[in-house]
Length: 231
Length: 248
Image 1 (tube, rainbow over the protein chains, first blue to last red):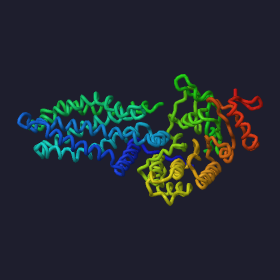
Image 2: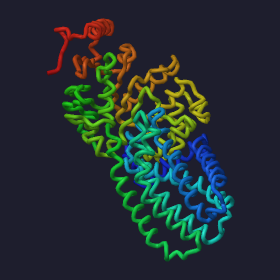
Image 3: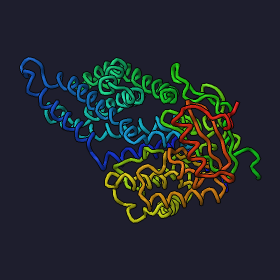
Image 4: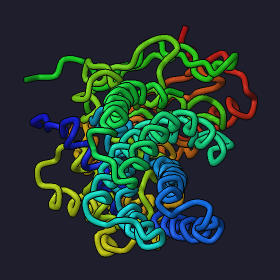
């Protein structure tokens, strides 16, 4: 029998991501949970701050990052949970694809999942807080994209580590949130300046830190991931 | 090119979890077309041994080779293996066809749709191929799981209690499929509690107790009834009768 050629790193990653997205499309459990959380959080924050004390432009970046962080955790939680139910992860591990592909596929699936949430959450934020639409919102969307890559890179790794533990729901945020701090600090600073009408050149140092974080953690987590699967 | 290495070679494999030695110095090799039935009580180390062979666990000592290559480091070796467990390893939100096609893509099967259809037909589940897995009974899910494991026509098939949850038709389909795999040159390792089911397809039988293989037999020369009685005495007594072969 001729030897078949298993898919390469990125092709296998895409297969894993596509499978995860197909499952989420069928069930929509995590998507609706994260979406309801995002819209409720926006609504609650809208009514709990006094507009005469803090302007909507000043509030919006903070609200955005709270919504992004916690809706991301909801998505990340389910990422490896769906592999555990009937040990689908064993079928992936026995297959000829590299373990790095599993990580990259999971991360890509999580990133696309978060993008789908933000497609609704960011316009809702602009609507609630009467933010300037157009270029500033587009730039902030780009900053959100950079932040999400870092959050997903770290969160996917910790999701794999936490899933087999008894306190998975608690452990994932406890492990992830300290690593999210550098991403959130830089992204929040940059978004605040953009909403205040400052030019992109002024936020460039923060964006460079975000890009560096993304590159370092995507590479480091891809290398570290196979070791998290050892029993 | 003729394959000179054994299909499966397990050399001095041990695995400990903390202080507990789950598998202790197991050796055996299987050639193409061989089927080893591995019997033993709960906790004997059968599933751990199968997970070691599948590359899901790293041995504390010893090595496992498939076709002369290490499963853990060689993707080509993993492409030759199919794993069937008592857990279905399926995604419940997807249909049987989607599950099997996903597996086929992971193994680089050229005609994904055709291969999935053939595998589902072999396990007599093609008529339910487009219903979600979660809507299927446990037995039907097990058939889909078997179809998923054989879609890439593996040369080595590892089976952990594959008859669990199968009805008579499902069991018969599985037995037929195992005979077919053997006749096509695949080597099988079958872990089961059920001696009758194991002996029906195996060429060799082994008994594990406390992590060690304590008895091996050639099924061609085996009296099934006597073997059943010996096995029962071995498992219930927990000791190895003096006339049984015990590997050093």
